[in-house]
Image (cartoon, rainbow, N blue to C red; front, side, top):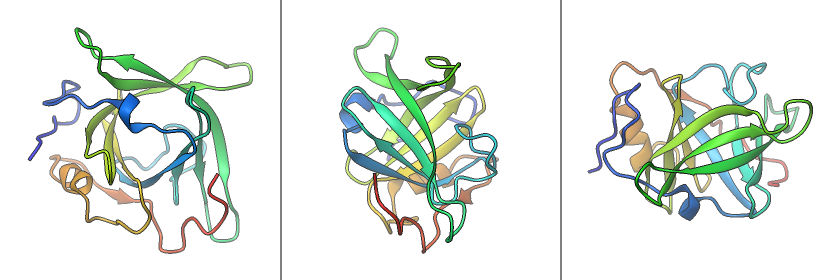
Length: 173
């Protein structure tokens, strides 16, 4: 079992590579996390039915979410900039930058990949805030992943499930 660091400690026990994880034309479904205000879309309270969609191989991406069953896809276009771990060629963190508008290129948040099995899920850490989120690579995995178990094991963190059974009824791109 891989141990992750306590919230606020950004040094991983093992390094995982985002460049091996993020693929063009792929959805990463936001299942759960430790925040109640979305870090990418702060004007929205929760990323209910949230997902990341990688649009191009140069990591232009979208953060989308479905606020209720009737309204589909609020989105934020971003550019993901992978960063190497100091002293290594492994890219374990990424800056999430504004893609367009007057803030183009400015960093919204920096995230670190704390754990992944590269086939089912990933656990990401928001540097600076101490929050986490779990990405599931397939629908309906729910809390049956190692990422969920790792997140649940972090002390003094309250988990919020963003997935609903009616999620992702619309187009997936």
